[in-house]
Image (cartoon, rainbow, N blue to C red; front, top):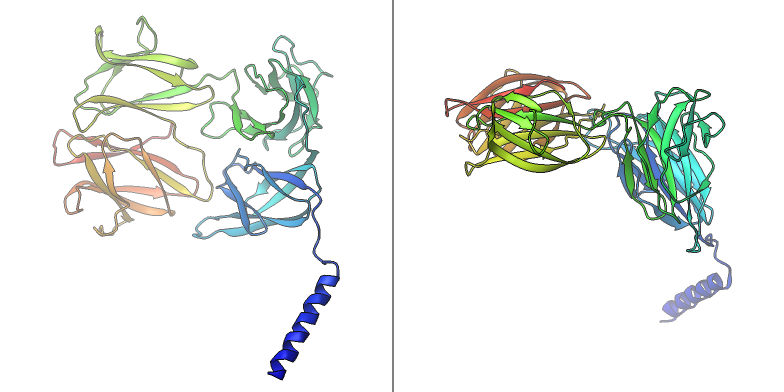
Amino acid sequence: MKRYLTLGLIAAAILLGGCAKESSLPNATGTGTMRALNVIWGSPEVAFLIEERLIGAIAYQDMSIISEYDDLDYTFNFDARLAGDITTTRVASQFLDVEADKDYTFLISGALESPDITIWEADQREWTGTETTFEVRLAHTAASLGSVDIYLADAAVPPTLGSQIATLVFGEISDPVDLEGGAYVLTVTPAGDDTTILFTSSELSPLAQSQYLMSIFDGSANDVAPLVAKLFNLTIGGIGTIPDSRFPPQTRFFHTSMNFGDADIYIDDPLTAPFVSGHVFKDITAFLDMPTGTVPITYTAAGNMGSILLDFDQEVFAGTRTDFYVMTNADGEDIRIADRADRRPIVTQTRVRFLNTATSHDIVVIYAVPTGELIDIDLPLFPGLPLGISPLQVAMPVGDYDFYVTETGGETVLAGPIALSLALGDFVETIIYENVDPAVVDFVIIPPP
């Protein structure tokens, strides 16, 4: 008993002594906000972490959510899945002593395996609620461009040397500028040359009492123009794409229904002249320029404007590429599917998309095996690909493959082997068409647009 009492008194003395001293832990006096922006063209998603806590995973042209942390010091980490890996690798770390009331944007650029981390710092903005202005910072994140002048002005005011808001090189950001609420056009030119337009937007109307970051990027396969801008609301979050107004959206049409018949396609009401003439089974058009907004789309029997096969309105968004598929579903109804594929190349991945349009087989199984090997019915790539849904996508390892399409269960081969070699960065689209022989289907690799 005496031994236990002595130990208890010692422990109490240590506890009291510790309480009598000031804590050695740092004390926070406020908070700072931070986010990360990925400008590595062709990169997979990069994980942004504070110490080992995930803030977000960000793809090219994307920004993480706004996060708020105490004004202490942290190590921010960046992880990515490199080519051929099944786990992520820590590719960069950045120490930061966060200051209260400061705002930080971590810019991820350079090579994915060893990226450069740049920190853009600004003051957090407090609004009284009566301001009629917004705050904007302009940034240059298009690695293909040299020094540029960036203008943000009324649409009626052409770019004129001396009126630019900033002259920047890649990785730079302007000082904050307050502008009155209203309609503005974002224009980018080479530095010192106000006659060569690299990018120009439609009218933008930023909200008053908000902080914005606008940045110019190199376009990807998802963009119709060589350059695209993004508008990031730093006050409430949110990302908006700003396409180059000189480039209309584009649409590609697929005819995937054997029983639909030859068709003409109109994009006006009332109908005048066909936009696409003689659209036949398995026909795939090129990407065609389209109007922006709600577009009336009508399919008629080829050469017969009065015989309407499909009629619908479709929203077409500026700066985008859209695929339209006409097909027959499992109930025998003629339908259309609108799809915007993510075609951007990812240099560490290979991606393949599959679409089943064969009415003779409303569910099929897809196998991908190394060239020359037999299928293993227990290991399908897709255990069931239904008819009449938007294309599905899967990431695959690099290599040479034989693809097979089978009935459910895998014993009855409907198509294959179809040889396909996959390399890093590939994006491959495929369609399964019905055949006049219902015992088989046609597995087709779509040529790149």
